[in-house]
Image (cartoon, rainbow, N blue to C red; front, side):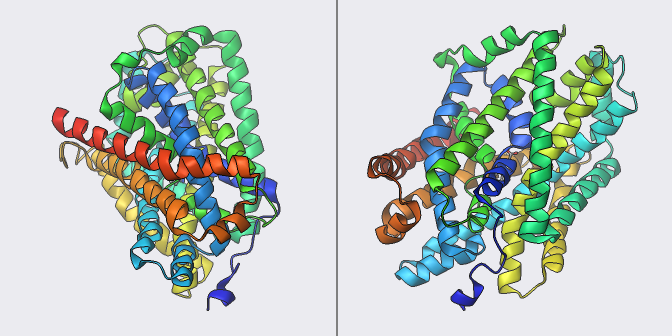
Length: 457
Ligand code: TRP
């Protein structure tokens, strides 16, 4: 059975397609919408420093471990882990890595599609000129009226999921691979154009000062946890997306180099998005960097609505965000789709529709969090905030921790050597980070963050 299953989904055309696909997965709403506002509400510089540190010493080693498990198993995350567990006669409890991942993926996809829907709606608002000349009050009221309309939100969430289905239906080469090869170059060109625009027209220096000058004293346990959660979220690790993509990776590509490349691109995009957003915020009077989730949807339209060429630049910006979200969401879909195909003998199309239907229904809960369920709280969170906190700050770190321990201590060194095959000095640094640093850091930050959360409400 296991042998038959090997590679049933096909593989990427080349190492480069894998890098682009993993970068596409990594670069998304996490970089453009979440990173700037989370950094903003946690005070900027110090948070950014911790975040980059988490990427380097926890994110990269764990991501390598994920790719390794995927490429070894060459199936959906659940079955890749299954095979490893069965073949090495280890405790069945390790299967939870695959399961946890697929569940987290579905939960993330459900709220991700809702936010991506906002971005789609904003393309239209921008392009039709509805946001031209807005000021603080009118931009906020546009955003509030977008959020207050559940039917509209469900419509855009549905449109977004529809786009994802189209891609994932095409399979690894003709769907995901092709989409990635078209979308990623567009994404990089657009972000570059926006950056150049900001360099000449806005307050880039102020933005850099906010992002890079740090005062460690205003970091709480909660912000450490958020920095780590953000590192997991932005790299797409801790839920099998990268494992699934790793399963389609050519055998001769180096895991270490590709993962470092992906992490580099991802951090670059987060920082550049931060610079773009904050430089616009700092050049427009009355805007605060601490605005929270509305930062991108309220502050930026004010700036775009009042600058020369703002209609075009603003529309381009939301196209960029939508493309980034799109190339990420397909990676949230793929693990469950691959699993349903392997286990339930469903065709790609049906598997896709089923997963998207579940995400769509759950997503309605997130849609309602912004209007009719606005005041219904789960532990002080709205349904949407609860899912976001549960996945980014709890599920992803726990699965990440399990993956680090699994590859660091449980998996046979022989398999690891076959898959990694790089210089022993680099391998020992990686193993050290995976065995000692990542588990300790994740545990400490996790406990500190939870204590902080519940002591301050
Ligand atoms: N990394 C994406 C972003 O930054 C989101 C994402 C895609 C993700 N796949 C994931 C997050 C898997 C966690 C796990 O927007």
